[in-house]
Length: 345
Image (cartoon, rainbow, N blue to C red; front, side):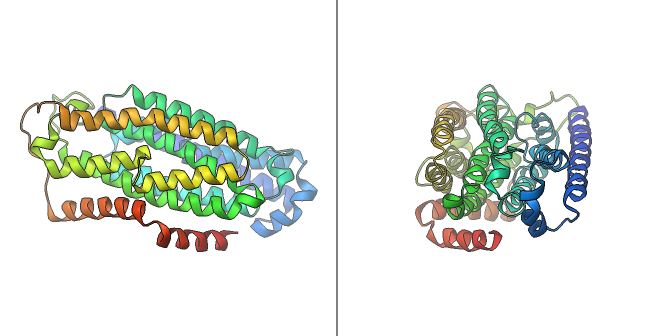
């Protein structure tokens, strides 16, 4: 339909532009350093940190990755692309693509751009990331508050989570907090991935067959979740688990992920960002709990059947169990995240 075509075109155009900007930034850094090796860039950073060519390359790479993680103000493609894509594809875009972009950002920040004089000096990429984090947490949550379309609400929620992860990236730029911040980011990505995939799977399970006379977005209207607890109690229960995790409510994995990230921010003396992240996270709980209210406290509107299959049931159960288990016993995954963080460093 037209909505899907619009989302596809936006994603294609913005993705192509972001990739071009990324490549141009790489070319400028190569021109300043004479190498694309991350270790070599880090070794020569002290000599070229004030060179305009190098500074512009760093900023262009930051802009390109901002598009990839859908950070404000580079986020405008995300809600339309997420809404227009088939729901399983949306889940992939909101989790795997975002995780890959953050992995790239962490890798660069921990190696090539790790010097403090580069982060807070001439290029000031850490200061720019701080403003991006504030804008992303604020606008992502405020826009999600206004949505009656659950799929678009989850899209703006994904934008807000990018802001929380940026707080962890900034904490990782401080030497004393780097190890804790990296493990916190990796744990956060794991918990967010399980929660978001599960939530989008529920949305996909209850969306109705598209018809030519359907209004765009009607399949994901919040009213379709009314009375879901009476019609499909299992779907309502796992959806509640996923939403509470994304809101950061204990004892879910999402709470532990945010706790580790904000603890790392406090350890890096980024008190303002930590407090701002907690406040915006509390604000975001409203639109997550709004869906729960519709599922459990509103009368059902119709008796539409949800899509059901053994594979879907298994996937939802596995995601819900992961969210709860990681919230109660996070230590095993945290040790894996710490080992992975030490490799990155």
